[in-house]
Image (cartoon, rainbow, N blue to C red; front, side, top):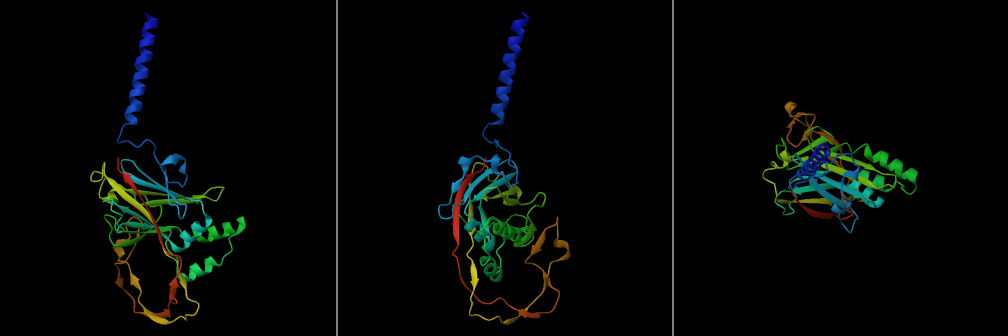
Length: 273
């Protein structure tokens, strides 16, 4: 009798455990919980789409609260171009490839900076490491445009603010670059409005503007604009809606630019579950 009771107990235990696993893996649940740490071992390799022209691979996923995006970039020339000319990540909740809502990261460098860094040698591992260190010091902020609850049309914020759009990036021992994004659904209008519907996610490598060597700097009038004192909420640095607090001053403007590397775009669709 005791033996039969033990067998029945084990049977019910296995059934209970199996039921829990089925429930945990049911549609509507994300099987893998992502950590935004630029380590992609929590992503399914088969989930990545590839942009043939650049070799950039991208995947999207979500849980109950956030949309997650992951990129990895093998080509060192594409990495260098992205860090100089900037990259935009678009999210279109209507799945129509509209570019009104986006995060810019890295933020585009000035034509002078692009010209300077393009002349930097990155052939040896040591030179590559020096270039990365120079670039990553300026990759601590992102620009965001078109998201819900923004105070200004375009805002600048740190890449790791709590309960905000977050970004993490890094390289592995093979010099492959990884970038991860997490975007709260509250910034996209709420998950309820998106559930079981597709949205479009796209990236754009911005065009690189190069200085014209024949141009001379000109002097122009500029105004200093201040951000309202109550706009720095949660550590966010806002742009585009301030008031003038100082009279104009004269400085040397950027020389005229000429077209450089053209922009390139890449889109995929993700169904929110």
